[in-house]
Length: 150
Image (cartoon, rainbow, N blue to C red; front, side, top):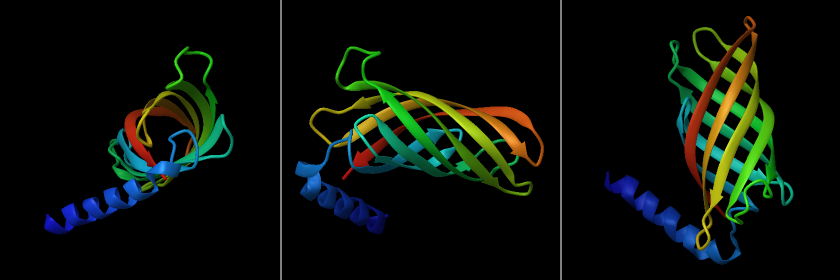
C-alpha cells in the first residue's frame, strides 16, 4: 500500500510540474474508465475538435475477458452552449481476448466536461458494438471516466 501511495504521489508531482502547459482539450491524457468495460483510458487530440482514444480494460460480460479498443472522435462544442462541455461522436474497433476471442466495430456517443483550472476531463459515453467475429451480433457498453492531460 505504501508503494502504491508513493507512486501516486510521484505521478501527481510530475503532473503538477507540467501543469502550466497542459490542457484537457489538447495534448495527451490518461485515466480510468468505469463501466463495461472497466480499465485504463487514453486520449490524444489531433486538432481542436478531433481525437483518438483507446482503452485497455476488463470486460465483465458473461465471459469475462481482456478488452482493447481504439476510436476516432469528433467533438462538437456548439451543441451545448458552455465552453467546458462538448458532445462527441465517433467510430472505432474493439478486440476482446478470452475463451472465445471477438472483434467488433464500435460507435461512440458521449459528453465530456473540461475542468477549468486543472488539466482533467470527465466523460460519460455509450457504445453500441456490432460484433463481426466469431459471429455477427449486437452488444454494447457504457462508462464514466476521468483523464489527466499532460
